[in-house]
Image (cartoon, rainbow, N blue to C red; front, top):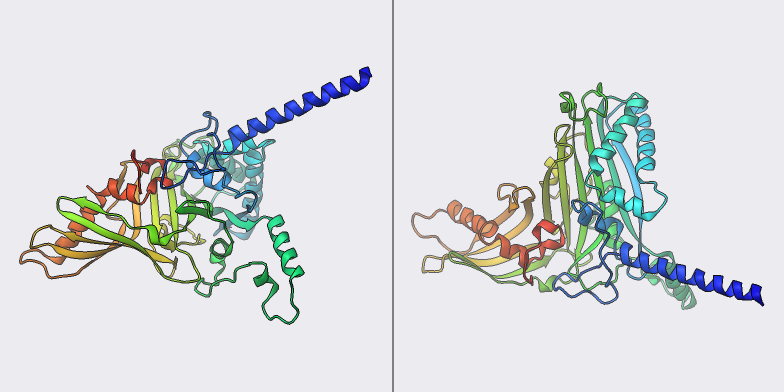
Length: 439
């Protein structure tokens, strides 16, 4: 009896420990998912924030990648790590081995907390680069351009696919002509998506079946892309701040794809003493492809600015940009969006009036790209891509160029805060989270 009593006591103690462990996991490792248009927390996702010891600098950026909403185990992600280079073939093989050693050393932790901390650390870039360059130096690779892509491919959880297949097979009619793939709900790849290999991730993002989580911007996949340019690595990786640090330059891109769940609810009103936005709308281009935004946070650095890189947020409205393999100058492509390097899924249109008197002019604005300087906390009007169409004649002395510049200046300047709130751009970066209710 005494033995049984001890077994029962230890059993109860074990259950208590497991319960406390589960509560600890839920409390600290499942960040809360907040509904985009209100301050209310979506039901079923009311979890507490992550521990405060994590660096706040990049944590909001990696949450989407590493702490995504699994929709009750409906969605999971497959990670794909690629290295591309213009170096000699032998050096490329050595670089791949150096990358493997670096990633295992930094990210192959014994528990989830240490892994997430490594990705969220403000020192991720200098730590990773220093370790990678150290391994490259040991391998004898001292020159070349290297691109490292960590891609996040969405996929339906295996249990979901199995249940679909089981239902489809049980109801299968041998006389029907549609395929089993169609019967279990798999989406065919829309013909408008290019077949190039660089669009492989985009094809998967578009065709993966996601349940709606009650948000207007729904994260569905992305890529973290690091580019390093080495002129000649003849210095120690520990001497990153030395006079030879010009031999290193590069950029880090956090790229996320967001689906617009409800295109018909993007109507808002903005008012300024010299201009009014009377209405707005998201226009969808393809019936088979939802409207997507591509959101990039880019960090451009060299050896001197490795720990304080130049940060920029770029929002491509209606565009899905693939991660192209490049030799140099990735940022030059990121800030441009054209048919050759992107999939156009829709666009945001604003309808308004410049001037409130008899000499006012009606206009239509199409916002293609918004660039936000995270250092000055202002929109970059020069690099933002906005087209303006004037609907009626101008008064004498007022040119089309002047009217167009005034519209852009007011929209991204005095009305910039209201535009940010109306579009709830704070979903994409904490620097754009403005006090007050958005839409």
